[in-house]
Length: 449
Image 1 (tube, rainbow, N blue to C red):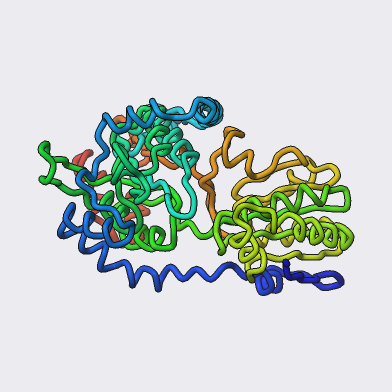
Image 2 (cartoon, rainbow, N blue to C red):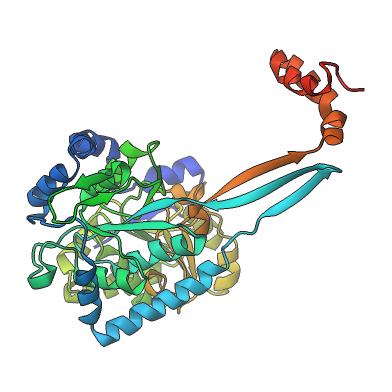
C-alpha cells in the first residue's frame, strides 16, 4: 500500500534526501492564475460577485452573506451536548496554552536618557478562514480564534463555505457546528463564503445592499487559516494588500519509530492524516524493517475498514506517502529534519530525548500516548501549522502571529548629543549627509563634541 525508500548504507545529504521525499503535486502558481479573475471580480463587484461564486461553486443561493445573530444562537442551542462539552474543553485547553504566549512590553535603557521600548501591538482586524470541503472543522475555528482573542485583536471576522445540504434556518449558511463554535467563542461576525472568493472578500471588503439592513464587511489587516489550493492561491494574490499566516499545503504526518513502536498505533496514525485529503502525506521513518512490515500488515487490515477508505488508500499510495528505511535513529532524525513535517511523532525508546534533538517540525508529538489527533483537537496546542517543508523556517499559528513588535525610541538632548558624532560619521560613509544634518540641526548645525 505504501511505497518504500531504502536509505540504508547510503551517505545522506540534505540534497539527496530531498530528492527522494517528494511532496504532493500542489502547484499554487498555476492555481493563482485560475483564481485571479475571481479575486478581481470580488474586488470590483463585491457582494454581487460573492453570491455568484457561492452559487457556482457551492450550489447555494445566499440571501444573507453575513450570518444573522439569530442563526448563530440557533446553532448553539441545537448543538449536541456531548459535542458542546468537547468543544468547550478544547477551547479551555487552547486558552491555557495560548495565554502563556502573550508578550510584555520591554524597555531597554541604552544610555542614560536614551531608551528603546518594544511594544507588542495586536493587528486591528483579522479574517479567519475555516474550511468546509471534504470535512467540517469546528476545531479550526478554535485554533484561529483563540490566539487572535488572546493577542487582543479588536475585530474578528470568520468565513466558511455555505453548505448546500443545510435546511431550515441554516439554509444558505455554513455548517451549523461551525456556527455554534463561533457562538461559543463570542464571535458574531460570520460570513457564508468559501474558496478564493472568501479570501478576496476579507481582503477587499464589501457593502451588501440586498438585505433589508445593509451589511458592510470592512477589509481586514490579516487573513489566517488553512484551506484548499484555491484558498492558498488567493492568499498569495492578496498578500501585500493584507498579511497572511502562510500558504498552507496538504496536511502531513511523519513518524520516527524504532522496533519498540506498536505497529497498530503507527498504522492508525498514518491513516488519521490520510483521511483528510487524497493529497495528504503520511511518512514513516524507521530503522526497523520488521516494524515496517508489521505496519504494512496493519494498514492492509485497517484501511478497508476505514470510513473514508477510498480517500485514505489514495493518499497512502500517493508519491507523497512512503516508508523510509534508515540505518539508525540519528539518520532518521536527519531525514525528519530535512522533511520538516507539519506533524512529527516520535515513537521510539527514550522518545523525549530523541524528540529534544528535532530541529524542524511544525509540532512534535512525543511518545506512544501523544498522537497527532490529540493536537488536532484537545492538547491545547495549535493545529494550524507550516506545511511543505516550511517548518524549517516558520512557526505554527500562535498569539505572536497576531502581534507586531514596534520599537519606540526615546532620547533626550544629552543622549542625542553624545551619539551625534557617530551618526554623522555613518551618514557620511553612506553618502547620506542629510541624515547627519537631521541630527546636527538640533545643535546649531555643529557636530557636538
